[in-house]
Image 1 (cartoon, rainbow, N blue to C red):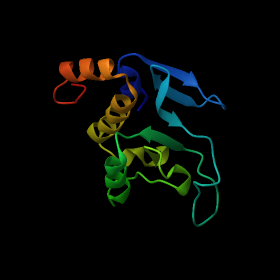
Image 2 (cartoon, one colour):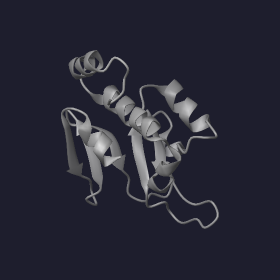
Image 3 (cartoon, rainbow, N blue to C red):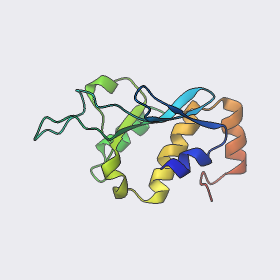
Length: 131
């Protein structure tokens, strides 16, 4: 995940409030590791998840497609209603192929990058892949 995020142009990795990784383009976060919060917890134990990653998405339709797909580990919580992002536990990233993970990260980057940076990247990568 880290290699994919940092392979995108103009990305800075900064430390969050607990020195958690935050990936930004143009000062805007597109992926970050979230601190344990009361809204994301194990329903069996009530323990807060300590491995939640937030990924920005292009729009509400993409968000719904991801969280409603029973084969995708993305989820959301009421705290993120109206926020163009999905949550994925780091412990479940292995359920995604490298291509799926790259697509999630690239979509996040594209949704937060400036229009010029996004257009330049898309012109150089018409298939929207890192290869």
